[in-house]
Length: 541
Image 1 (cartoon, rainbow, N blue to C red):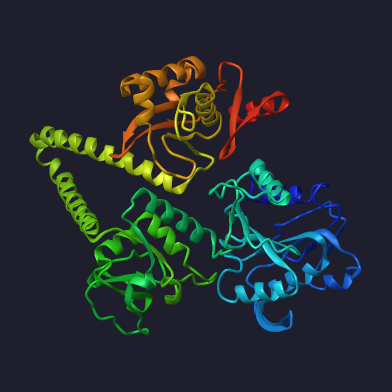
Image 2 (image 1 turned 45 degrees about the vertical axis):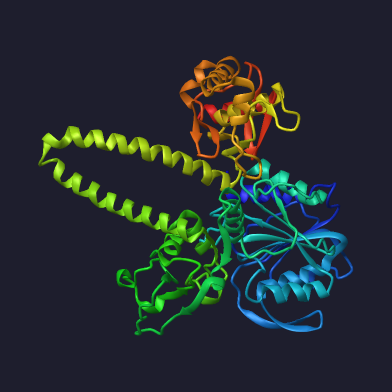
């Protein structure tokens, strides 16, 4: 579905009669994104305020404004502040709200969490307008820029917390709009379902995702501690154009622009030194570990969350000081560093094998045997890492967690309805875009595993896997075996059942009669005309 259609469904859901009895659409952008064609009042152009009845107020105000406009001084709430001109248009529109009204507008990421944003929010709050929600739009919403903007929602009610969510597809976006409009306080830690930030702190979606993953990492590995980089940095140094940094022990070098990676070896840097920030670390963290951390998927996410600027994206030293880093014990850091070094040695050895193999065919069989052995070992490690990574990232349209397959963890009993929940998810993955079911992982991403369930009801792993396969055969169907790959993954402290599902080529029905799909991190049953329409559109492409 086109990104603008998803956003359109979100706005239309906010405009539903039970939420908004009157609405105005203010259209100022040449690349429109927020549209409400059925609004009671529609005005265009930057002189819009002259054509609006000053005595009229609305339950919903939709402001579609350009991004990245210049800054100018303005007085709001008795304070003179510097604000972007598009923000100023938003501030004018807020005065059209009824006491229970809602104003939504598109703004630059990451909304008002950095730079002059907090002062702008404070000024609006002094006039009685409060930021209650921030919504990440789908990628590629705008046709004229690669910027991924956000939708902000203001009202006259101070909720003291902030509702945040990502808009991913039509039905999910509608569900998010309804939950927000109802004032629901979601218990999830998922941006797909919507979540509440109790402290109201928000400095961007990538920064929030990084914080959530770091928190889950600390849960998975109790010895990890979370710091911001400034807490463990002795120095943070930069140089002017044409100057060079001097090597200092236990330092990492963070590129401020481009795609170069973080390194602890200054001699390996190929970009000019004025595009680097040298971070000299205290003895809490080893530079080799810190460099490896910021080259990991989580580390790269953290660095992306720091990038600012629409014209020349870059990382500022002040923002880098706030970058989160998860630090294990020194002993574990040393193990991680050694493993990285050994993997690098292995990569070189494999490259040498590849070069010489054609000239030494007699060695091919022996090499293949060693490679098979390594792949078997590394494959097991990779699957364990994948489970840990998915559990940190959280549930999504293609990832689902179940704490058990049949065990009611509160009552300690075997329950059919719990098995039914897992089987529905598998059927939904087959009928949608595929996905991964992890059994032995809680909704919060904790990993108790399924050993207790196996011992209590099945006595052995083989008996558990046979029971699972029989349930697939009886209730999902043997014809769907080619699309389902299930196995037990050993994490050391726990076993997790991983069920990889590919999209099926034909409709899959639970017990031969019930049809399910994934609409967000939830499984929905389709019936009647909706089922017919979905099957025709999804399977007859």
